[in-house]
Length: 352
Ligand SMILES: Nc1nc2c(ncn2[C@@H]2O[C@H](COP(=O)(O)OP(=O)(O)OP(=O)(O)O)[C@@H](O)[C@H]2O)c(=O)[nH]1
Ligand SMILES: [Mg+2]
Image (tube, rainbow, N blue to C red; front, top):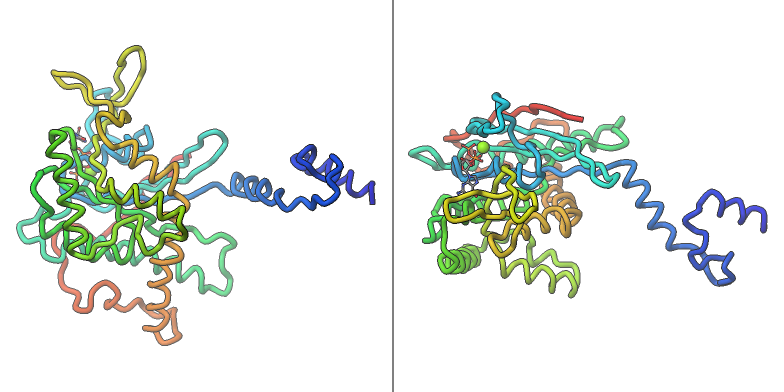
């Protein structure tokens, strides 16, 4: 017995010295070592995150994605000068990048959408976006129900949709309400006030408050949704976030030297706006929510709530024949011709 225990310990060095049998704690079994096993498995597999950005043209969607991941993850300009500009987004495009930090690998996919609501008649312009989201659920479902299914199903489901509100300082437009009301039922929506550097602090605070009231009045449940808080701890943390939403953000992919430090910012005649400085804007809170504190939860809610609702509905509708075509009724009971966005989408690049 002693030999086999020694053997286990040689193979699992993380057990040694952690209060196990060998340090004399006779009651120690080693259940806590599962955490290390999970960590190693997760490190091997890597992580996937799919973020979609939606909002009127020119609100800084592509720029914010580049700011978030500190590289040109959203769109690459055709010209490669330092002064290069991000071209206008004209169709739904998914761009995947494999990024690695401290040995942790992540496949990040940014789904960039063209100006939302740019048409004269914007009725039903949310439809192509809804269709894209449902198409990803459908793809996942078809993989899942395959007899010969893959060990790991590729996950293209949209985990989070960042909705850009124009910095008008007034109130939400009917279009914003319509989009968030419909889409918050199928995807995690994180609303942000775009180009917040155009608002004074007072304007910003009162605009944020107005938006929160309007969301509440229209029964729009954005992420983190109250009903999905798991316990009191969750509730406490998420309540603070809900009081801050929507984050007033500023984006930039230009680096500047300020007080000897390199940082992302926007240089103006009266100073440099530092995008990651919480005294300047709330970009850092958005980054923390999406990446540092709630990434796993965002993915869990996508899979256990939004996808689950789609799956159950789909399997019921096809009456036990899930290989059939997805019924049109999934997006809207009476689908009509969508305006605005091109429904087609494509995966552009996959960089290693
Ligand atoms: N003042 C200010 N300008 C910004 C901000 N973010 C981006 N911009 C500028 O706004 C312009 C448009 O930015 P994009 O990121 O291309 O906007 P977009 O929403 O992707 O536009 P479309 O692709 O046309 O939908 C660029 O000149 C950016 O430099 C911001 O936070 N504040
Ligand atoms: Mg764009």
